[in-house]
Image (cartoon, rainbow, N blue to C red; front, side, top):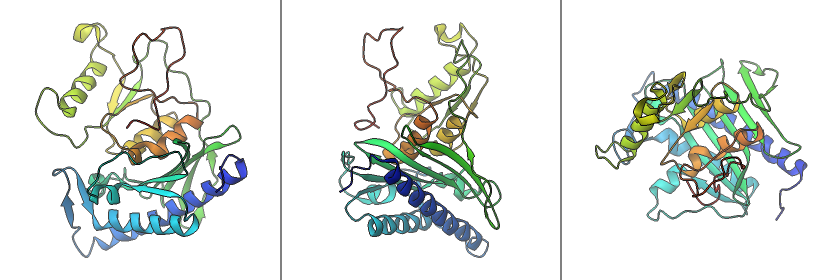
Length: 300
């Protein structure tokens, strides 16, 4: 088994992931076209905003079969196969692992809102190392964000026309610095999530409080006011992350997410100079010291 530490190995994985993401995106575009003749059927998982369609399941099957045919000794973690299983253990180990969200933004897809993406990430030593995010309904015939997280790697953005890819462009790297008084002046991204329980300790209540804190004037909310320029909720954590990675936003906050929600996005974000921090940092952090990274292999 290769350790996948050379740039040649990672370039091969990157090319494979990008091509597979586009292939899955074509399936989804064709599936949406078929909706003009037959209504889309959805099923609820946790509740009425946690949806799955046959497209989610078929795309994950397509990706899983392609990965295991090419890399039979690699592990595979997919949202729909995990959700359908009876055990809910944390599955990520240090071996080569593909982490896939076949459709991030299923609710968006149901409503034909274009912020929908196929997210394919590859981890080695529990670190997101290759990411491919294909948004099939953006940019004519789709938009691809991808990266190899490596000193010799890179991060790229491509739009596709009817005859194939247009000229790939490097994603901004390094990203512009945050405003000096951040979060003031930042564009903030956050998702409502599928937990809609109306209780003081629910994830929805905590997120709502955080969103209001970020929006409130400086000095408001007991000193927690952030005065951000604006809040954006795209309905897809993956799209939130690639927009941050490409410099079209500044901060993203997410809680209650899973590996497949963020794996590919983290690989792209890290390669562009972004950081990922834990929402529950350790005590006694030195304010002048380095910002601690999230424990990417051990927490959601």
